[in-house]
Length: 76
Image (tube, rainbow, N blue to C red; front, side):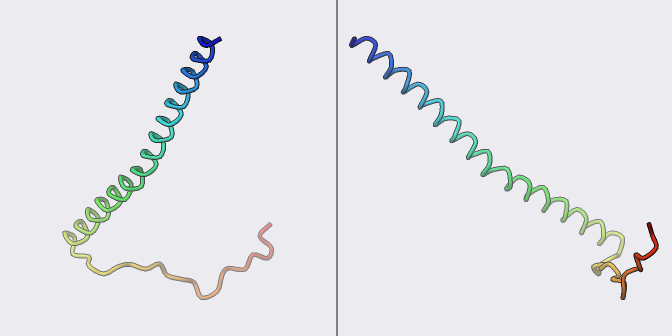
């Protein structure tokens, strides 16, 4: 009887250790992913700004907004 209780306790603690390890691994991976993506975006933005400076383009381009949208009647 005592052996079976010890076995159940051992299995329960082993499952708990695996579960906690997985939770910590997933949470740390989720915490580091946005940082890496932000660093990559920053590097690409710096590279594009540097390329614009090399070409002599310094002002930001904004898309031209149409004054009124095209009429959608009769397009089907």
